Image 1 (tube, protein in one colour):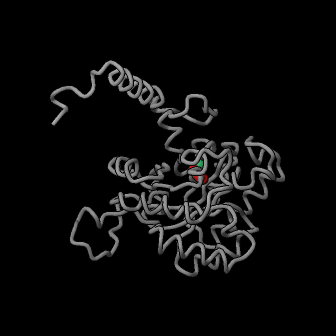
Image 2 (cartoon, rainbow, N blue to C red; image 1 turned 90 degrees about the vertical axis):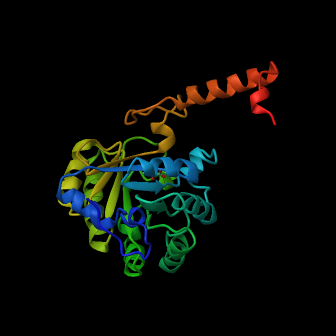
Image 3 (tube, rainbow, N blue to C red; image 1 turned 120 degrees about the vertical axis):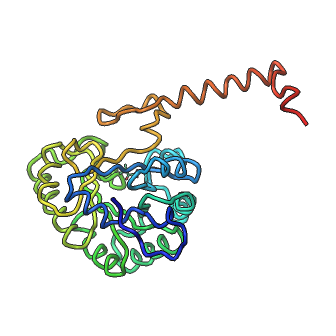
Length: 279
Ligand code: KIV
């Protein structure tokens, strides 16, 4: 099932793209939505071939691409660069790009200008913004400009220094109540989906059941309408990062270090290149 975007390309393949209305319909049909992050052309091309529904150019690029311990340092220009690399590879998935810290909080005009840059220069199909009530005006202004927004509630990593830790959010009744209220506000303000990060599964179910728009969980249990993971985590690029919610589908850390070690060995022993690999 997919809605055909009215693009002018002749290619049948290119026109069958996932849209926000496809995701809405998937919720109605009880069909789960698969979301994965990507940050560069080569991985995005492979992921798109799998018929992933949504590719998220997450500001987790700050962690897994740049090596920072938080998502705070990554800039708008850097996120635009990652978006451009990913979008160039995509024929099928909806590409949503995170607005980085400092580009949308507090001032709706600056937020709109940042979002427009992400769409025009980055080529994003939509953006993701962290927060609830405090960003509602901004979300209204950006959606009124025709830009699709995915919300993000629960553990919002850009606020890590306010939370003080990466532990599960909204375990207490007050925070859970605010999260449900925020989710409803985000839907009313025009978000097309909401990421729920690291909250109790039964709270995620309650939010999911209260909304018409889909919820996408990460560490939020099985009742969300879809799931998202960071690509490097799913592929097991860092064996020491293994939070409870993560399932590693490969151990690329071993595959990569073993391949590179064999290469070093061959170079040292003058086994590479051989005659067939020479001109
Ligand atoms: O930046 C990111 O990768 C994210 C996901 C973990 C939801 O926001």
